[in-house]
Image 1 (tube, rainbow, N blue to C red):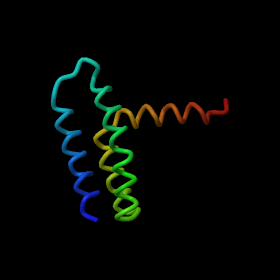
Image 2: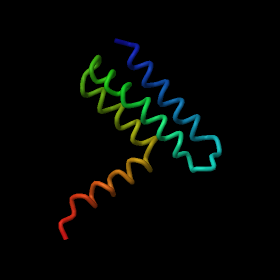
Image 3: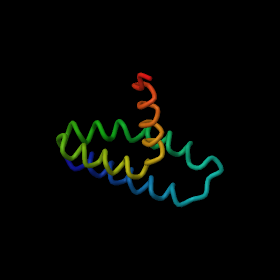
Length: 83
């Protein structure tokens, strides 16, 4: 039960460390990699530790990857628009 939480914390530390280094593409490649690795870890945390801890780690991941979340939100709003 502790290993999913450890994996989530390692993911959060790695995301913050990657964000400290300069990047030519404004960290988008790193964001795609972190999303690809983070979604299975988030599912593992939710499966092993419950939805409350899963939501907590989801909020932590969204705070680290705020620009991809922002653009996803804008894209979803554009799909729903019924002008």
